[in-house]
Image 1 (tube, protein in one colour):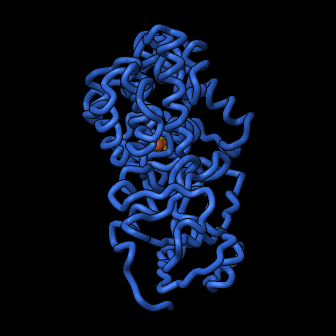
Image 2: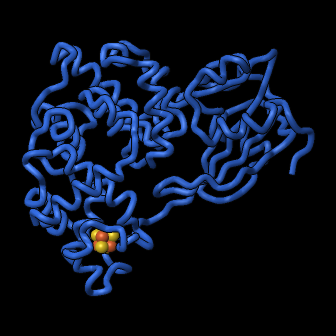
Length: 351
Ligand code: SF4
C-alpha cells in the first residue's frame, strides 16, 4: 500500500496537467472549478472556469451578480441548477461566513450544491484535511485495482469503495493524493483501453492480473432515455420577437426560449394546432426548420423551429425583446446554435 501510494504520487508529480486552478488553489477557485467540472470534461470546463474567474474574481463579485448574468456565462454547460446553486452558495459564504469559505468538511457540506465529493475535494486541496474523494475516475481506478465485480452504482459497493479510498489516502498530502487518483483515472485508467503499461498501480491491479479490465467497473442500472418533441414558435414584428422564461422544474430551468409547444409524438404542427395550443386568433407559418436531435444525459430532444407571421400581442406570458437584446439572454445551447445559423425572418415556404 505504502509503495503503491508513493509510486502514484511520483507519477502525479511527473504527469499532472497544468490546470489553472492548480496554480492558485484558494478555496474559492477550487470550489468554482469543482462545480464547473461536475459532469463536464476538463477541456470544455477550462474556458468556463477562466471566464468565471475573470468576470467574478472574488466570491463577493459572484454573490453580488445578477442571476441572469451568471446563467448567461454558464450557457452551454448544461445542468443549470449548478449555476443557480453556485450563486446561492456564494451568497451563503458572504452572508453567513463573512466572505471566507468554511474551513472544515461539515461547513463546506452545508453550502448549496456542495455534496460529499466537492466538500472532500475542497477540504483536502485547500485545507489539507484528510478526506478522500470518490468520483467516477476514483471509482473506476479502485474498482479495477481491487477487482470489484459488484455493481458500482449500488450503495454497498460505493461504501466499500469509499472505505478503500479512505484507507489509501495519504494523511500527509491528502490534496495531492486525491488529485493523483483522479488524474490517473482521467489520463491512464480510462474507461476504454486503459494504458496499463504506464500505470503506477499495475503491480497491485487485480483487473489487470485477471484480465477483467473490459468488465470492471460494472453498472447495474440502465438509464431509461426519454424522447421529447419541441416546437418553437418564432415571430418578429417591428424588430422585436417574443421570448418566455422556462419554469423551475425541468431542463434548462430559468433560461429563455421562444414560445414553446411540446408534443409526445414526432409531427409537424399545422397552423390550426398551433392556434389551439397557444390560444391565438391567427397565425401563418411560413417555414419549418427541423434541427438535428439534441442529446442530453437522459433525454433526446427533437426540435422544429416555426418561422411565422404572427401579431406578438396575441402571445401570453412573453417578453418582447429586440433582436439585439435576444442575445443578451441566457438561451439553451440548442437555440443559440440555431440562431448562429439562421436569420429569424428566414424562409418563405413550409416543408
Ligand atoms: S493497471 Fe490498468 S486497469 Fe489497473 S489501475 Fe492501472 S490502468 Fe487501470
